[in-house]
Image 1 (cartoon, rainbow, N blue to C red):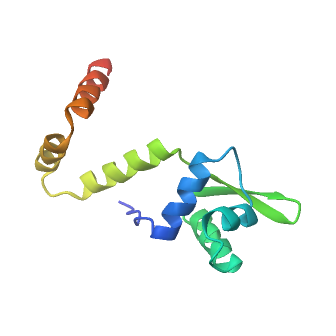
Image 2 (tube, rainbow, N blue to C red):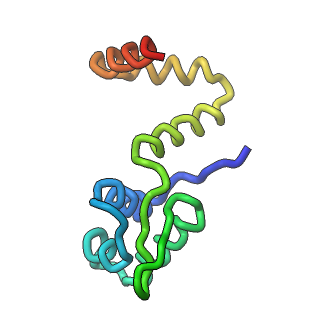
Length: 117
């Protein structure tokens, strides 16, 4: 089983920017919108690492690359939840504990989804 490491704070911020964007973004766009206080090369390095981890695609556009998320935010969050569940010693206990923390609205939504499957 391959374990995916959790995203770091800057990685998470960059992914959130890309998930909410209107399409692929250049390192310059990510830098100016997400972390202008950091060095441009720092943002480029994080984008490259996210690409190497398989979390982003990149495509050459002129002299630069543009980056896009491989998964939607919903798919990414579900994958993270599944990874946590896979690592659990007692899956039933983890699921039970999770369900107990749901708001009544989220519990109703979960019931609705389960009835559709």
